[in-house]
Image (cartoon, rainbow, N blue to C red; front, side):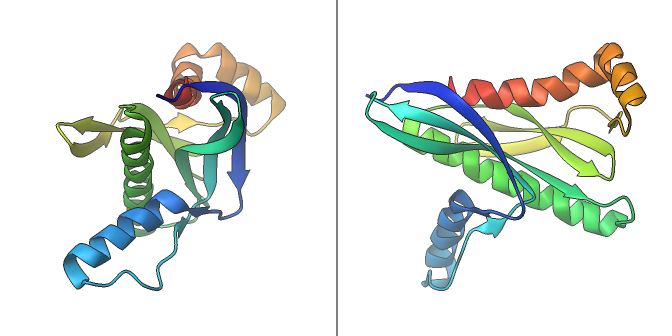
Length: 173
């Protein structure tokens, strides 16, 4: 039996590849096309990871969540595609955590359109995954120091945003 001790959190940006999506894509290719060659992990905008120590010997990083972002000029079609991609990628992460460690999670996730964030959740039910919006009200991220103080003071926005991070952190605890 493994136990994980949370030691560090990382937020990687700049299109890192997601190994869990590669594994899911390979399985789908093998199941339906009878080949699994020439596949790689999907590139993501922001990858949230933690570094853990397994049985006090080996340090390793675990992917916890993917956050996707598009500029404010992006159209609705692009945003829909981006949200679907983020949902699939987070499902891949959740599936890998469940297979490797028996961890079932249901985290609040975030997709950004400029400085506006939309929250959704991905949950596992009897081996199937479902996604849905957490709220219809978007989170408007601060763009200045003054806006940051207002953002923190407004409990609803700040609590949902911090909930994204807290839920992701709880995945590894």
